[in-house]
Length: 314
Image (cartoon, rainbow, N blue to C red; front, side, top):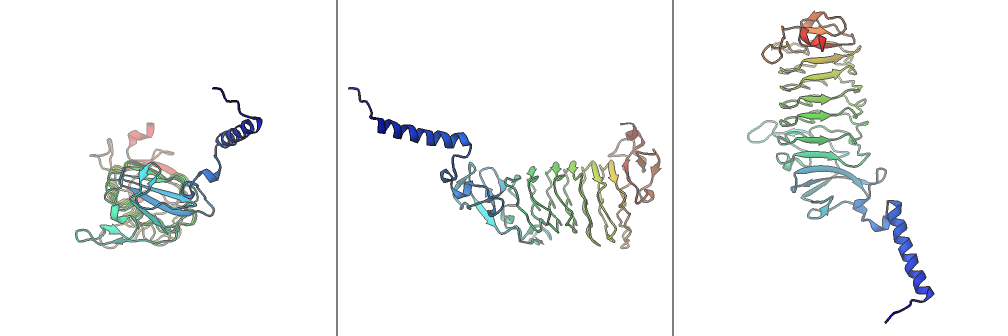
């Protein structure tokens, strides 16, 4: 038996098909087809973070809705969800075995499991990122380029003890409002590549203490945008940076001398021959070829310095 639909049936089917096809073709399928939690809203959305034990990830979003623990979200089961961190200020706290072994960050309970961090949505704008990723000893992947740091005033201990992290690109961060960088990368033992090119940093009196302390693998730094006019204490800033072999400084750089009786200061480390081939204890100006001991490197001079004479030809 063959049924022939009347004109009104054919028209209804055709209209419904066109509606669906049009929605798909628009690339949005209409907001009515989405749950609020699936709709990014950079202006009025709620900022939240999701930790998932499926892949030990911590991901940050700004959406019209917020998922719950146990939900499937972004192809992962939600283990925990956190809100309120845009206005929160967190610090390191003591544990039974470590004076700085944890923090008050909302996700600190999972700090030893987290392996990947990603900022997924735009306009997440915290006032502080201090200790956010501290003590994440398994952290290997970080994508935070979309984080809005333009109003962020504190970055102390942000990556403290992220001991397995090897590469980090923070070149997109706006640090013009930040005054506290203390111990920001301290004990990032495996960190070889750190991109902070383009930073216009204005640390306060003691805002650089131990910033790169114990970054044993760090190879180069571009500090040409740092203005140390207000800084009076940068002790241990480069302490134990035994692999550091290239540093760029700017017109507003000065050497901060604040000897506490232990010989600490803000000088670059003396290049060690056992970790830097050809090192003879001096830093060599790329512009002039002249060698300087750490304490003799000129202040308020824009130049790049390398840790051995042989590196000048590279």
